[in-house]
Length: 442
Image 1 (cartoon, helix red, strand yellow):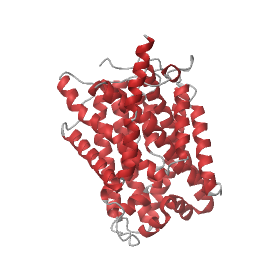
Image 2 (cartoon, helix red, strand yellow):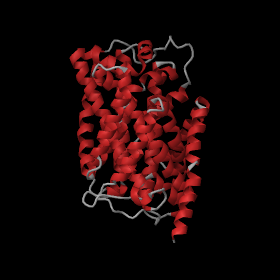
Image 3 (cartoon, rainbow, N blue to C red):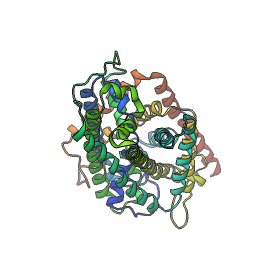
Image 4 (cartoon, rainbow, N blue to C red):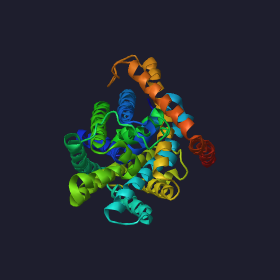
């Protein structure tokens, strides 16, 4: 595998930093804000819980599959590098373009948008403050990541530890003091489930999303061949258990119809009802910190894709986008680029709608990566740093889950799907234009 960017970033990330980035990047707004939409789509509490479990299984099988690929390609760039090595320059470029122009900024904008709802409620501000709060937070976290990667990694460890407090509080209180039956409730106020089980699973995948972003830091890990698979597998497994327990805890404490009416505010309402005004505020603060950790994880990883592509000369203004600070080796221009795009998206897209389209777009390329394990096995019959267990069953489940996600979203939102696919395809003429300009300079 020789199609990888030259490494100029520090290999300073260890086990706890990697685990914290995986868990911290995954656990954020999804589990706290998607309970209502998952329940509405599923139509019952039993199917809602099943959707969170099924989404976790899809994610875990995908993680196990990509872990084998990533262990053999431990370079900065993650999915971008995997797709290029497996399928060639064009699809590799589109995988990177999708992440830096569509998926990365959109997912940051979506998480920031959800977080600003809770922040506005926390400070007693009106809805008009949501976008300004989201923009300020993204800018602040972006500035923090202009320094050496250890700064962002330390923040990831702190926020990951901090987010366990509200998570534990919700799980323990819901399971021990909830009076509802978590299973068997029906959302009677919704005549027809809004989308069905497939759309419910799609909504949970936004909550699970972010696991692959640790692969973008492969070039900055101390021992990526061993550390990358371990971080992905342990991180996803922990999140699957946590999400299932949180969902059961919330459904034991709040009736399904009330969750439907509260929508995005269900978790904040639970915090106040369970722990009083002051306790609710403290719990809300913990959730806000959790989301900041998620934003930080994404802000660490996405600029590395920009950097990796710019190092290859695949983007306009690559010379500037590939700049790293002399001492800290931080991709500062790439970070500012992602911050700028995310800020623009906050003004034009609703975070809930944006989150579903993000998942659809990235799963188009996840599927290619999942198929890629069969290509790698055919090329390399020798020893591997990590082998996917239960091969080929696990990759087949990952592929089936990915197809399930894509078909569900195409039927649910064909217009949005066409828009995001169109933005990805626009990358092709840009790629050829950049290459023509490079050829003229030679």
